Image 1 (tube, rainbow, N blue to C red):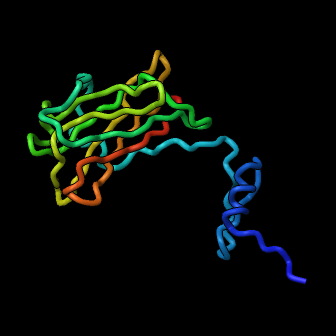
Image 2 (image 1 turned 45 degrees about the vertical axis):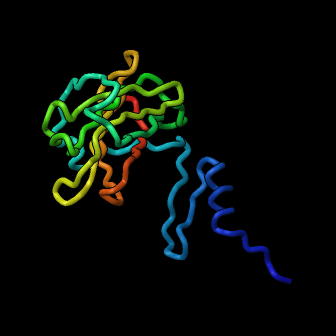
Length: 170
C-alpha cells in the first residue's frame, strides 16, 4: 500500500495557516519557523535614498509624463491597505537627473492602498534603468519606519514600474 505524500505546496499552505509550525525547506534540513505575526515589513534598500529630497511636493504628474510608477502600501502584520500614505518618487528620466528638484514628486495612496504617478520615461543611470521611491511621512499622526526602494526595470524600454511597501509602525 502506497503512503500519501502531500505536495510541498500543500504542506506549505497548511503549515502557514497554523501559528508556530516549523517549515522544512526541502532536503537541506533547514527549519524555518512560521511567522505568526503575518506580513513582514519591507526592508529599506541600499542606494534607495540617493538624491532624496525631503518634503518633495505632492503633484499630479512629474514633467511631461508617458511612464507610470505604481504600487501598493500595506501595514505589516495584518496586511491592511493604508490610505493617505505619502510616497515620494524620483528617477533619472528623459527630462532630468535624479538630483534635479523637477524630477521629484509625491503622491498619496487611495482607499485600497494603491498609488500611481505619471512621469517622464526612466532612462539608465549607472547602467541600470531604475526608480526611487520612499515612504517618508506620518499617516494621520501614526508614524511608520521610513522605507526607501530602488527597483530596477527589466528593460530600458519598459513604460511602467511598480513597487510595493509593507510598513511597520515606528
